[in-house]
Image 1 (tube, rainbow over the protein chains, first blue to last red):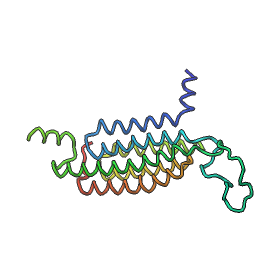
Image 2 (spheres, helix red, strand yellow):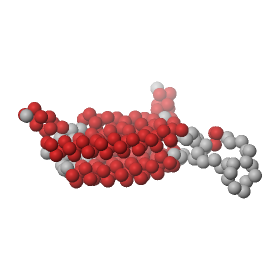
Image 3 (cartoon, rainbow over the protein chains, first blue to last red):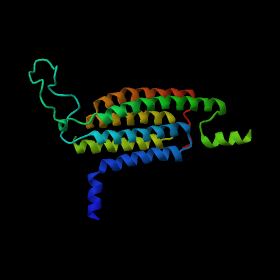
Image 4 (cartoon, rainbow over the protein chains, first blue to last red):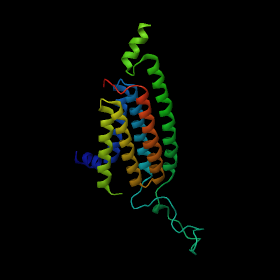
Length: 136
Length: 81
């Protein structure tokens, strides 16, 4: 039992990411307003991006910009060895940069569709929209 | 990465996410979503992903909040849940 508790406490950040994902999933499934659903989709996306970025983080490492690298000017140590353990892994950062931009594009399309639905039916609530579809 | 600062900002992220989902006003929900994006940006700056952090601060918090506010003003602020 104490091993389970210690492993939960040691990986507290992963549990909080899962909690954020579940908040987003609840907003998509449980809320009836279309704007609330779109906010839920965005919270889910940012939670997944946060999980991927946290994989690239290391203890005792700095940001992935090479210190005293070749071509850096007045340093003669151009052939120095670069220790990879001193820098964080930049590959998840670059991948998630693309994901953020795609998230904003999907947000724009979703909000445009929500505005069209509002102009058609006069409401943003899902149950009222469904009842008006059934009446026609 | 200081774990105390990490934990405080993670708590703020979860609090703003719950607030953005639970509040009964769509404009307040949009503004709280902007606050959520800024807290997420701080979290990434702490983790060392500075490029992701400033992209999130400009695109996620800035442009997304403007889109939400524009959509709310074109439709309605009222919501049932």
